[in-house]
Amino acid sequence: MRTLLVLMLLGGPLWAQKKAAGDSYAGPNPRKMILIGYVKGKNADGIGGQYISYDRNRMGFQWPSSLSVDFFDIKNNDKSGSLTTFSFSFKGLYIRPQSLLAYSLGIAIPLGQESVDEGAKTKTNFFVGGELRESVMFLPMGNGVVVEAGLFQKYIFNSELYPWDIGVRAGAGVQF
Image (cartoon, rainbow, N blue to C red):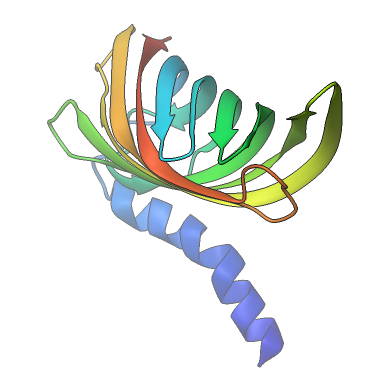
């Protein structure tokens, strides 16, 4: 039973990709995106960047992966500091047929370092967390400008300064 569950979890996304392509799939058209954006949360403000790779010819649902880095300035009650996160995420990307819009739902694993200002000294901590990202993207058919806007929910499990946040992300970049 456990083996069947593992096979379904691992094989399900692959089956869904082949099924979504149907007979009209013209072959792979790999695209890459680099996005830079602004992140505004309840507890922090910052900037971030993402690298995403996906197949532009595959309409419907697909599973691209992405790498991202975020830099935050945090003011939480009487403490302040900064946070640098590096994330690897799995995205569910739904590209509407004959459209320039795509919808994305991602799960990220942020790792990084926080610096907490404690008066005359600064304390640094390593952390790990989890993040959900939902967004709408404008994707050109060929090379061009990409625009993304969405929401995020971030949970940092062992952070003194930034245990959770919710907010918006907006960014732009290039697709090549």
